[in-house]
Image (cartoon, rainbow, N blue to C red; front, side, top):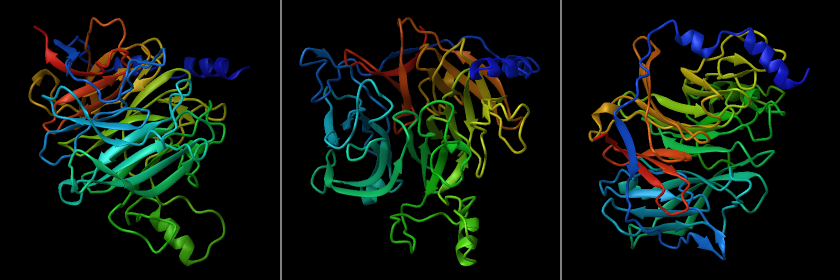
Length: 423
């Protein structure tokens, strides 16, 4: 029996997500909200829709802000150029061009520029962090620290790069890549299982590797280990075990102390809720299920023992002890590649208040999910309709005021959308 047939058999014996949801009333009525192009007059410096006679779609991989009171928006493209602009700008400025270092190939489009996060004290120290696939070594991602130019706030200093972490992957896909700072001041890093299908190297469950994990590091300090340009937070779930093994000179490979949570496949994307401090992440599925999770320190989210809340491995026909269920999942009748977002905390669209925004890259559908933290259950999953033929949503982001945006692959350059109440 092949894996697909076996998985289908296991699913037939397993409580489905729809059946579980039927036990409670969930609001699935469409929201009176619609997406609109956010900056219709914006021109992207250096980008051309036609490059040497070949269509060259804009690939805005994420959207974020510096938290420095400037209200500027930063949008990197997957090929390695970070653009910066204000909401009333008509043209972007190039904040940093890493295209000579970033490896991106259209037919293997899960590589490239992947993550950007500004230091919580960026206004004082000018530090920001990026994660990208490097041209130096195949299937390798680099996490680096950069600093802004001393002379121009809209220019980074390309010579300031300080490499912090390098992760080798077995294939070109499942990179993850999101970077974000938590309320604790530590940097969180999403790393996929490294690629191919079915996690053939069991990276998701292997605590000796960084693949298939959410990591947490302290970029404001360094350890005594000269090979690390960062420190490990003392309360990381495996830090004490690593320290104890080293102190007692125990044999065998220790777990990686950087690990905050594990058992993930391709976390795309993750974000902290401004109000509650919870860390939300979506995980792209394999054969049947797309999922949404709330991260827990030391939590095992199941991959590749499970896909979503369902058994995946032939050796795991029932739930394994300690695995954390997703708070929401949907099957491949609705979409085939989840794009995670964030909890809306803006003011312009009160209909979205407290909802988690997410989409499906393949089907182009958009939703707003409401999770009740007291009862620990989803109470609403409401669709956001649009008239576009397709909206290949790559990422969500928010500006300094908390207003929400999402980015799409665009042949016209109009790759940033926001939301408004339906008129």
